[in-house]
Length: 95
Image (cartoon, rainbow, N blue to C red):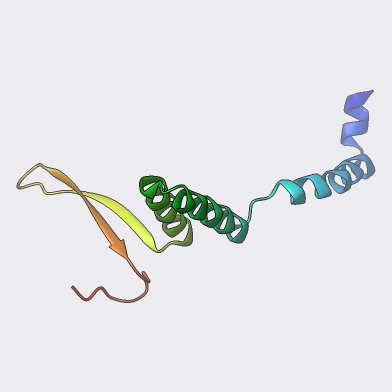
């Protein structure tokens, strides 16, 4: 019986309609994510937890696409290192 209902397009449509509010409520937007990270950063600053504040700020930068990390291996040296670039990724780096 349930398989017959699941194949019915009206039932499928109604289930999707009923799920929409729950899905929308659970969605995390970039804006809300950045706001939450900013609140956590501010709380860490108030508590004088500089390390936690820095970590939250780096997380905000990564989420916004401002803080970019990439790993690179120098085949001549075989020592991996990390390049961290700040700023707008569409603009060339000056230094």
